[in-house]
Length: 200
Image (cartoon, rainbow, N blue to C red; front, side):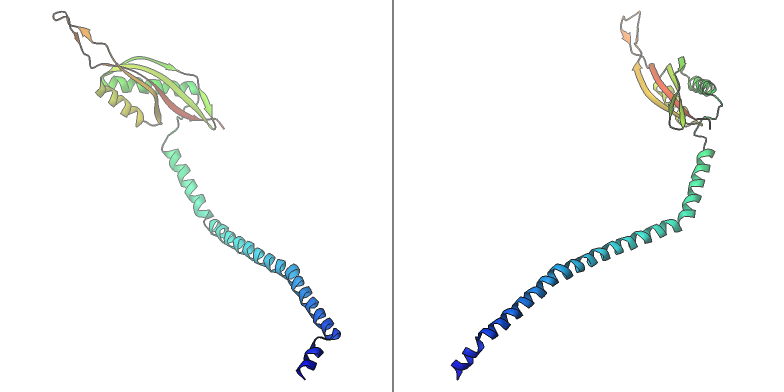
Protein backbone atom coordinates (compact mmCIF):
# COMPACT_ATOMS: atom_id res chain seq x y z
CA UNK A 1 0.00 0.00 0.00
CA UNK A 2 2.81 2.36 0.90
CA UNK A 3 4.54 1.69 -2.38
CA UNK A 4 1.36 2.46 -4.30
CA UNK A 5 0.99 5.83 -2.46
CA UNK A 6 4.62 6.70 -3.15
CA UNK A 7 4.18 5.86 -6.83
CA UNK A 8 1.01 7.96 -6.91
CA UNK A 9 2.88 10.95 -5.50
CA UNK A 10 5.43 10.87 -8.34
CA UNK A 11 3.10 10.57 -11.30
CA UNK A 12 3.88 12.83 -14.26
CA UNK A 13 0.71 14.85 -13.72
CA UNK A 14 1.59 15.47 -10.12
CA UNK A 15 5.15 16.35 -11.00
CA UNK A 16 3.87 18.88 -13.53
CA UNK A 17 1.63 20.41 -10.88
CA UNK A 18 4.54 20.70 -8.43
CA UNK A 19 6.70 22.17 -11.17
CA UNK A 20 3.97 24.68 -12.11
CA UNK A 21 3.53 25.60 -8.44
CA UNK A 22 7.29 26.08 -8.05
CA UNK A 23 7.43 28.27 -11.15
CA UNK A 24 4.51 30.31 -9.84
CA UNK A 25 6.25 30.81 -6.46
CA UNK A 26 9.48 31.85 -8.22
CA UNK A 27 7.54 34.30 -10.44
CA UNK A 28 5.80 35.79 -7.38
CA UNK A 29 9.13 36.15 -5.52
CA UNK A 30 10.78 37.77 -8.54
CA UNK A 31 7.79 40.10 -8.96
CA UNK A 32 8.01 41.07 -5.30
CA UNK A 33 11.77 41.69 -5.59
CA UNK A 34 11.51 43.61 -8.87
CA UNK A 35 8.39 45.68 -8.16
CA UNK A 36 7.65 45.97 -4.48
CA UNK A 37 11.15 46.21 -2.93
CA UNK A 38 12.13 49.27 -5.07
CA UNK A 39 8.75 50.84 -4.29
CA UNK A 40 9.28 50.32 -0.57
CA UNK A 41 12.85 51.73 -0.80
CA UNK A 42 11.56 54.74 -2.75
CA UNK A 43 8.87 55.34 -0.13
CA UNK A 44 11.48 55.22 2.67
CA UNK A 45 13.71 57.65 0.74
CA UNK A 46 10.80 60.03 0.10
CA UNK A 47 9.80 59.86 3.77
CA UNK A 48 13.35 60.88 4.79
CA UNK A 49 13.31 63.78 2.30
CA UNK A 50 9.90 64.84 3.60
CA UNK A 51 11.11 64.76 7.21
CA UNK A 52 14.25 66.78 6.32
CA UNK A 53 12.15 69.37 4.49
CA UNK A 54 9.76 69.57 7.45
CA UNK A 55 12.70 70.25 9.80
CA UNK A 56 14.09 72.94 7.47
CA UNK A 57 10.65 74.51 7.16
CA UNK A 58 10.42 74.74 10.95
CA UNK A 59 13.87 76.38 11.06
CA UNK A 60 12.84 78.94 8.43
CA UNK A 61 9.60 79.63 10.31
CA UNK A 62 11.61 80.29 13.49
CA UNK A 63 13.93 82.61 11.56
CA UNK A 64 11.01 84.49 10.02
CA UNK A 65 9.40 84.80 13.45
CA UNK A 66 12.57 86.60 14.64
CA UNK A 67 12.84 88.80 11.54
CA UNK A 68 11.48 91.94 13.19
CA UNK A 69 13.73 91.54 16.22
CA UNK A 70 16.78 91.10 13.96
CA UNK A 71 15.81 94.17 11.91
CA UNK A 72 15.42 96.20 15.11
CA UNK A 73 18.83 95.00 16.35
CA UNK A 74 20.43 95.96 13.04
CA UNK A 75 18.88 99.42 13.26
CA UNK A 76 20.20 99.78 16.84
CA UNK A 77 23.70 98.71 15.74
CA UNK A 78 23.62 101.21 12.86
CA UNK A 79 22.48 104.01 15.16
CA UNK A 80 25.15 103.12 17.74
CA UNK A 81 27.78 103.06 15.00
CA UNK A 82 26.68 106.49 13.79
CA UNK A 83 26.67 107.85 17.35
CA UNK A 84 30.15 106.57 18.16
CA UNK A 85 31.75 108.69 15.42
CA UNK A 86 34.14 106.02 14.17
CA UNK A 87 34.35 107.69 10.75
CA UNK A 88 35.75 111.07 9.86
CA UNK A 89 32.90 113.46 9.09
CA UNK A 90 34.84 116.01 6.99
CA UNK A 91 33.51 116.76 3.51
CA UNK A 92 36.73 116.01 1.61
CA UNK A 93 39.76 113.74 1.98
CA UNK A 94 42.07 116.77 2.17
CA UNK A 95 40.13 118.30 5.06
CA UNK A 96 40.09 114.95 6.87
CA UNK A 97 43.86 114.58 6.42
CA UNK A 98 44.51 118.14 7.64
CA UNK A 99 42.30 117.62 10.69
CA UNK A 100 44.12 114.38 11.53
CA UNK A 101 47.56 116.02 11.17
CA UNK A 102 46.50 118.86 13.47
CA UNK A 103 45.16 116.39 16.05
CA UNK A 104 48.38 114.32 16.00
CA UNK A 105 50.55 117.46 16.26
CA UNK A 106 48.58 118.62 19.33
CA UNK A 107 48.80 115.12 20.90
CA UNK A 108 52.61 115.08 20.48
CA UNK A 109 53.10 118.60 21.82
CA UNK A 110 50.74 117.96 24.79
CA UNK A 111 52.70 114.80 25.66
CA UNK A 112 56.02 116.72 25.62
CA UNK A 113 57.41 115.12 22.47
CA UNK A 114 58.72 116.87 19.36
CA UNK A 115 57.06 116.53 15.99
CA UNK A 116 59.62 116.20 13.18
CA UNK A 117 57.18 115.97 10.27
CA UNK A 118 53.79 114.81 9.05
CA UNK A 119 53.02 113.79 5.49
CA UNK A 120 49.63 112.97 3.98
CA UNK A 121 49.80 109.80 1.88
CA UNK A 122 47.52 109.18 -1.12
CA UNK A 123 43.97 108.22 -0.20
CA UNK A 124 43.07 104.61 -0.91
CA UNK A 125 39.54 103.28 -1.39
CA UNK A 126 38.24 100.09 0.16
CA UNK A 127 34.62 99.01 -0.43
CA UNK A 128 32.48 101.86 0.96
CA UNK A 129 35.32 103.71 2.69
CA UNK A 130 38.22 106.03 1.89
CA UNK A 131 41.36 105.32 3.91
CA UNK A 132 43.11 108.54 5.04
CA UNK A 133 46.76 107.88 5.96
CA UNK A 134 49.30 110.28 7.50
CA UNK A 135 52.99 109.41 8.00
CA UNK A 136 54.38 110.88 11.24
CA UNK A 137 57.96 111.35 12.48
CA UNK A 138 58.56 112.41 16.05
CA UNK A 139 61.08 112.23 18.87
CA UNK A 140 60.43 111.66 22.56
CA UNK A 141 60.95 109.26 25.43
CA UNK A 142 58.91 106.14 26.10
CA UNK A 143 56.47 107.94 28.44
CA UNK A 144 55.78 110.62 25.84
CA UNK A 145 55.30 107.95 23.19
CA UNK A 146 52.86 106.08 25.43
CA UNK A 147 50.85 109.28 26.02
CA UNK A 148 50.74 110.05 22.27
CA UNK A 149 49.65 106.53 21.32
CA UNK A 150 46.97 106.50 24.01
CA UNK A 151 45.60 109.87 22.86
CA UNK A 152 45.50 108.72 19.21
CA UNK A 153 44.01 105.29 19.89
CA UNK A 154 41.18 106.73 22.05
CA UNK A 155 40.31 109.54 19.64
CA UNK A 156 37.05 110.18 17.85
CA UNK A 157 36.88 109.75 14.94
CA UNK A 158 38.80 106.50 15.18
CA UNK A 159 42.52 106.66 14.29
CA UNK A 160 44.55 103.47 13.99
CA UNK A 161 48.33 103.29 14.38
CA UNK A 162 50.01 101.27 11.63
CA UNK A 163 53.62 100.39 10.75
CA UNK A 164 55.29 101.85 13.82
CA UNK A 165 59.10 101.95 13.90
CA UNK A 166 60.87 102.87 17.17
CA UNK A 167 64.64 103.36 17.35
CA UNK A 168 66.78 104.72 20.19
CA UNK A 169 68.59 107.97 19.49
CA UNK A 170 72.35 107.89 19.56
CA UNK A 171 73.79 109.13 22.81
CA UNK A 172 76.06 112.19 23.09
CA UNK A 173 79.76 112.09 23.98
CA UNK A 174 80.65 113.55 27.38
CA UNK A 175 83.47 116.09 26.89
CA UNK A 176 85.00 115.37 30.25
CA UNK A 177 84.98 111.56 30.26
CA UNK A 178 84.94 111.13 26.45
CA UNK A 179 82.34 108.39 26.98
CA UNK A 180 79.08 108.15 25.03
CA UNK A 181 76.20 108.71 27.40
CA UNK A 182 73.02 106.85 26.63
CA UNK A 183 69.89 108.76 25.75
CA UNK A 184 66.30 108.04 26.70
CA UNK A 185 65.11 109.74 23.52
CA UNK A 186 63.56 107.70 20.71
CA UNK A 187 63.12 108.28 16.98
CA UNK A 188 59.56 107.19 16.18
CA UNK A 189 57.98 106.76 12.75
CA UNK A 190 54.42 105.57 12.31
CA UNK A 191 51.40 105.81 10.06
CA UNK A 192 48.06 106.98 11.40
CA UNK A 193 44.98 105.76 9.53
CA UNK A 194 41.46 107.15 9.64
CA UNK A 195 38.39 106.26 7.57
CA UNK A 196 35.75 108.27 5.73
CA UNK A 197 32.53 107.02 4.19
CA UNK A 198 32.43 107.45 0.42
CA UNK A 199 29.90 110.04 -0.70
CA UNK A 200 26.57 108.44 -1.64
